[in-house]
Length: 556
Ligand code: GLN
Image 1 (cartoon, rainbow, N blue to C red):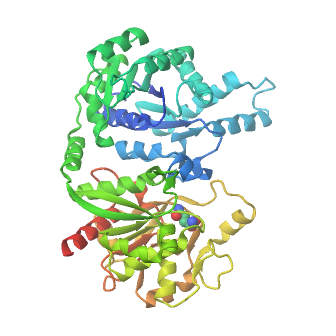
Image 2 (cartoon, rainbow, N blue to C red):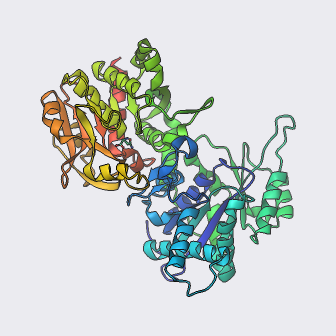
Image 3 (cartoon, rainbow, N blue to C red):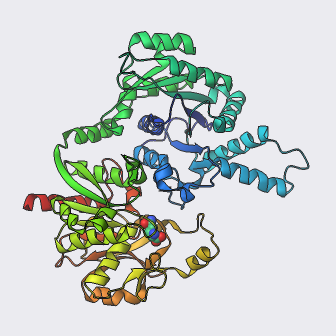
């Protein structure tokens, strides 16, 4: 994409995206969609997530609590929203794209201890917002974008949001022509009333006003499009032009959202307010992706076996959002519609005979995870996939457990295990790395795993090689403490396991698969391939897995 327009004027423009009324209404998708639209108009965009919590990163938060931990290429453990940013913009996430309140306070206090404030009082205002602004300037310097879109976590009115809003207000005060605000709000349609209500959005806009911020746009999320009457009403009461009220009704797929926002010509309206020229939009490729999604009607049944799947009565697909999106991308690309079956592995432990429900599946996937709970049930599922020739894809823990299963049931190393599960196992086929042992002993858990990008050398003639054939050097993201124990490699290989991807610098296993003569498609990765999948450009191994699932369907 041409990066033509703003290179003349070096100034970076800011778009702050702020939530109103309630969470989970698609603020992250709106942010990502604005990014896609501006990129499609030829601009360079960076997206930053500002997170309210005091955690330094998302690495120490339970996935059932806050969704998936998304890993940036440099190893930052971040909020799942960064995954959407990547999937919509193609930009790779780095540490500077993720700011938490904890990082901000830590840095201010570090500087205070170093006497860097020259004996002055260090105060919440302005020192905390100033540090937030300094962090945004780092994104300007390092990524040199035309626009920085900043998503502020949480909802306006939350006490914890205030300092980020304050930073946004201060930035606007210094350069009003370079800063815009988008309020993403929700308009409920109460069943008993049957009418779309604007009042909560009015309150949200007022609350934003009380933080010294006037929204330039309100993106109205609702079940249906907004009618003229409501646009006029919000315009009058929230103090903006009717055309700046953007309608964002529910979409079948999140990937339709850029097209929906463009129905209201959102991109050009943003450009106009910045004093920039209208630009023709090239969402041609994007439209093709959406058309593919709509045309994918044949189902593919894929079982996801693991834990972290439920909270109360609800399935928490958010804990594995990148895995789910990767399966979708690969399925759509192959004209299939994925039907996901979330299976709690503890069900198999309680009722071993229920394992046969896997027979109906076209493929089985075990995603990443930690700890002991539900492990034996997962191993039962992997065994079933192996013995019944069902395509199997294991991600990180899913690969480690596949190796344990193979060692126990094929190589007859009966008590084979990971030291994560049994510290005293005699046969640690998966073991903690030396440098990690120290971290565990010292309870030094934050940001100490093997994290971020590492290269893998792929062995010719393997499933992995067939999948990666048309890509360049293989570079994938990691987040784990344990590794395949090289002491057992030759025994595993003798029995038909192939180590098809290696991080050669340290001789670590990156990909393990079964010889094609034994099984049609059985492969696990030590890394997390799900972070590198895009709509219209699926991650190669997911594509390989889905193709194998399709082959199984056509055979059965
Ligand atoms: N618990 C395993 C490890 O730390 C796997 C981690 C994961 O699946 N991300 O090595």
